[in-house]
Length: 155
Image 1 (cartoon, rainbow, N blue to C red):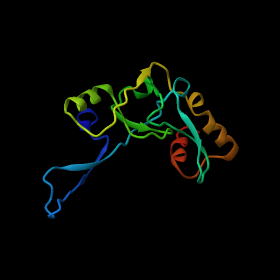
Image 2 (cartoon, rainbow, N blue to C red):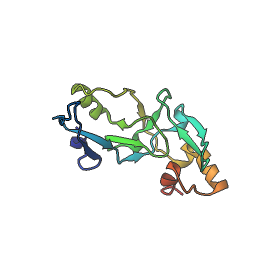
Image 3 (tube, helix red, strand yellow):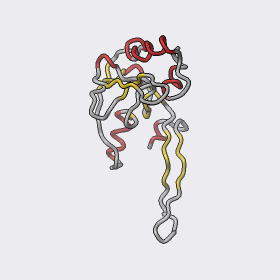
């Protein structure tokens, strides 16, 4: 179903499963690797938690927990159907409303449903990750971790 919305974008890694008798399970299973990361959570409109890492590089990072209220930038997510957060660590992936509706119709199970609002506001770096920018100004660009990978695109 994901492939029908975003062909060739994400990775589906085949996994062979075997039953207790050692026979291969005849159904195809895959590990799913979401390859699209989008910074779209509008911090000033959302309720997100900021944390300080307890291990190196000790940089602040935003964490979006499943109980937080998230408002997304419609401009940032436009054209995407499956994505994960960029700088924001989340407890899952995001899917577009059309794909979500198809998943429900197909009775795909075992995922938590959390409808989110999206508003027509641009996602701007300085409006959404200022604690990280302040930390980088004082300490320099982190050399490891999630923030390092994504900050290279911005600073």
